[in-house]
Image (tube, rainbow, N blue to C red; front, top):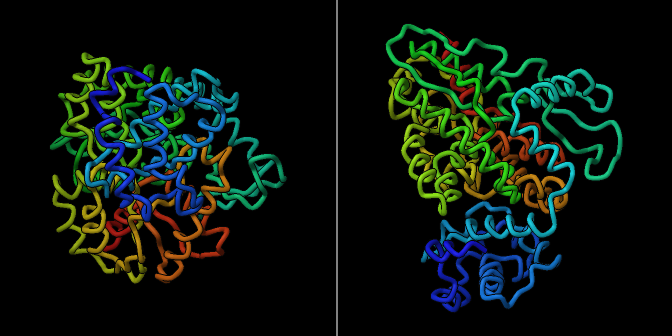
Length: 428
């Protein structure tokens, strides 16, 4: 493990206190579906300390344990000492990747994340042939497999593909009056799968007479690679994005992101990743100050709330799920609700802050039984509200919650808050 991590986390100083506490256990996503002290925050910390001191071999058992964490940061949120358990597990996963390598299908996926043109080509081919292997549910931008194959059961709901990505469907500079200007970082799922999010965001900006710069050269924020331990891809994409953002950051008020995971990666995790590259860390901190979640910026820097208040009330009931990367990492939870409740009735689920169970690439592939188990209580909460719509500003949550609701036969529809706001603006 990198020696500079001592500056982030001192195992020797807190290991005993951590073991005696246990406040993290009730909120831990993996412990709630796999009640084993080993796969709990204090279990992780104890093993991480042993690994750091050279008393634990990073064997396949340890690999399996460290890859079982959802990285939901629920433990960090309630920890009296704010121990960054997630950050250290992310570092250990890099060591795991170096020792055991990364599965071929993950390598292929991360290769696409490095090269936009290759990603465009792959998703275009996927759109052409998706009906051969999948049944499309266009009403919810999803699909199910026609066949039972390893890691892809026929009843599993996945996001469907669009013919043209968001970034390729619009010109790069969109003039809405020239009074103000923002850049948009769309995220991969929003770009290729849930395209209506970006289209709706452009509608909102047009209504507000705010110019939009689509930043078409943007690369994936690399959150999937970061959580998997592929630090080479993180390094490549993060440095590219930082240099790219530096070129236009002074020309825009903000870089708005309708995705919690992407926003958190850009604003927070880039700084963590570059902990041992001070020059890049400084550059990341400086340029990423311009990054905001979309509802965060729209609520605090525009008159959108008062505009929505004059629009027609919608009869649909909405329940809101708090993405881990929004509420826990960025403290954003009131902003989307403030905008939504101007036109919709919000009925809160019993625990909107609990993790939906997405958990990253490894959890969605090799450990999907954990993701499925974690999603079951969230689907039950949504069903209990009898809401017409469940909303969250995160497409990873959308993918997971749609799948969970499909298993539980919940008829609630998922919409990003940006989509709900655009719908409300169309009403007179």
